[in-house]
Image (cartoon, rainbow, N blue to C red):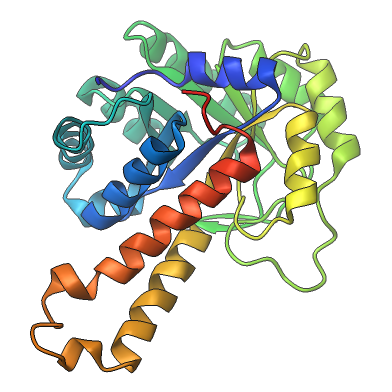
Length: 289
């Protein structure tokens, strides 16, 4: 099945009050694990590459071909969108031209007027090629590829202006954080989320960044208020590392050819697949393909 834009899958999620998981990939194993989990769950899925991860894997073209080829070789039949996560302006334009089916232009660190103008340009170029667009208002807490956000609450009026550019889904700061959540985290601001959902028309899919570590009850409430895309990265990294550590500490890499990377990386890869399947259950997208 060919890659698809994320617009339709997220509109269906918004209407059906569930969310699509957007899982960041970091290598071949990660990508296979995400696709396997989505296929086994019969769920639409978004595979994301950050700017840094794409560079690590050999560039955006390499990432595109890897995902396309795996969809073909693995016999994947569920809808899959390939999405640029937290892309700078030039990176978003590059991915649009290369064949990504969805991009995030993140200008949240810029003055709002500049963010808005560049968002309009990205939307025009993306929609001309059938590519879906995500933009951000109110920076997300923590750090993502050098873009640091303090986790402020997005201004609803700015969210309305951004929505009016024609973007397909909106990431808005509601107290969420990239990476691990601190013990004293105040939780998501559902009042602000409700304001944003109302002022943007009640139909625009909203995006929850920093989905790793948010309790299930808060995730489900966020979905009920309009969140239709939830990003997951840190948790996948954590389960991969834990499973790999267990394998090595048990001495399995010293048994026979246990050092073979196909064996060494298998426990971590399987752990990601199980996490993907669990999060798909949490988000309500199982059997929604």
